[in-house]
Every structure is written in structure tokens, then in C-alpha cells.
Image (cartoon, rainbow, N blue to C red):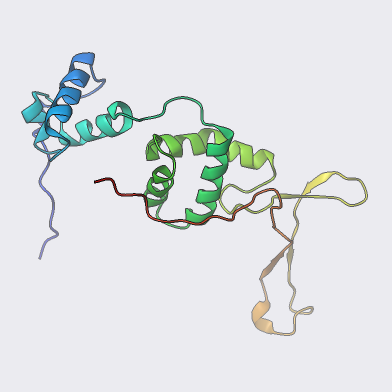
Length: 192
């Protein structure tokens, strides 16, 4: 039996691509104000737009939706993103960004992902923290006070009592004292 494939949301031959015009934005905003979001697959035709439903949904959610916050992220937002990312980064990437966005009113998952990749990762690296694992990358040498990368020491079979430890790596302490990761997660509030 063949895999079930969802039919395309639009006839690609008659669909406009590229940048949105002000007129298209006004049509989309007016339609959604009058009728609500509803079914994105049928919305473009009903609103008089030559766009696909996915394009309309993304334009609305990422640019036109009331309450969106634009501009520079605050330090408080950055710290919350770091905390949430440390807790959620083992989940599927798209789901993690959506869950983080649910905790930052007015910010979209895509905007947060882009901010992470362009700013927050660098901030963590400059603090000596691995952005993927949220563990320390450097330590202070006791004698000189210089910052050095952590050393990975292979555990040899002679120093280990069991042979199954051969090839394991002993990675020195990776605690990150300046990141308070205490956080309680709950589902986002549902508006009626």
C-alpha cells in the first residue's frame, strides 16, 4: 500500500510568490478581522489573494498578527531563552522553538530560532558555555588564572578495574555556575 500524501493546498501555476505588497497585507488583515483565521487552505481565495494558504498563515503569524513584538530582545528574554533551551533542546528542534515562543508573548518561534542562531549562541560561547549542551567549555588554570579549554582524558584499561570502560572519556566538571536553570514549565494558557 502506498504512502498517503496530502493534496497540495493550492494550484502552484496561479500562485504569486515573493514579497508581499501592502495591498495583499491589507486584504489578509481585513479578511481575518471579519472572518477569523479559519481554514488556511481556503482563506486565500475567499480573501481575494493569489497566494497559497501556507504563505498566508506564515505572513499572518510572523508579521501581521496583533501583539507581535518586533525589535531587540531584552536581557530578560535572552536569559529565559537560554533556560528554556537548556531544558527543551533534546526535543525535536521545531517543537522546542514553539514551546519557547509560547513563553515569550509576542515573539514567534522563527524569530526566536533566528535570534538564538545569530546572537545567543555567541553570547554563551563568550561566557565559556557550549550552546548545545549548556556545559562549561573553559576552566581557570589555578597557577596563572588563565582560561583554558577543558581537557578530555581517555580512561585507560590499566587505570580502570573493568575492561568495559576502555575508550570512555573522563570529562572534567562541566557545571556552569552563572546560569540558574531552575524553571517550571506548564502548558501555555488557552484563550477562549
